Length: 286
Image (cartoon, helix red, strand yellow):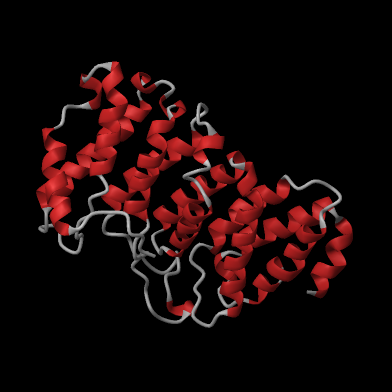
């Protein structure tokens, strides 16, 4: 998935030169730090070609150092209550979207021929040196205790969350692990998004079960999120929760790559049975 936030080649080079000319965030007065942070986040929307380490090497390293500076500032005592300032919400999410919502490298082939953790190495994203830092910025944002979630919902909206779900197709396990943590936190903190997130997980699973070209990347991680979600369901279960078990989780047992996510799937099913043991017959009958 590619989203139209980000830089063209000329813009990338121009922004890179601006980055190196700016002072460090910690070196300016308190009143100037948030405007400078916003400016640096905007500059970090610049994107580069990672097909070769020689292409734009200096610019890529300049951006990486700026992202490191942003993460370190967000981790420091100087950034106390930073995420209470709603001025950073839109620029931060715009930078995240420009870097994360991109075309992924997807291996072609039958499901059984793709990466198995016991057989070989997974496909690693070439731009991970930048992407990993952007994920860390987003993680700190959605987990910040001072975050005003009511205002943040204007940028962490359904479109943004759908962009994150598209990235679960990544074959890089590091990326899927980051996504799992972030989507789980969004589910926990952005209460009005919960129903939408559950429906989206269900849609992803149905696409995987019933589409000929779907692969299992992300299924295990989404099941891990779901295991925590099911644990919070009240008893008696709502009809749509029971329907999720019977029409989505049970059919996942028939997919070709069951072994890749069976432990997570079994945990989810067991969570349902602990809450309503009478569902056991329906589960056994499939």
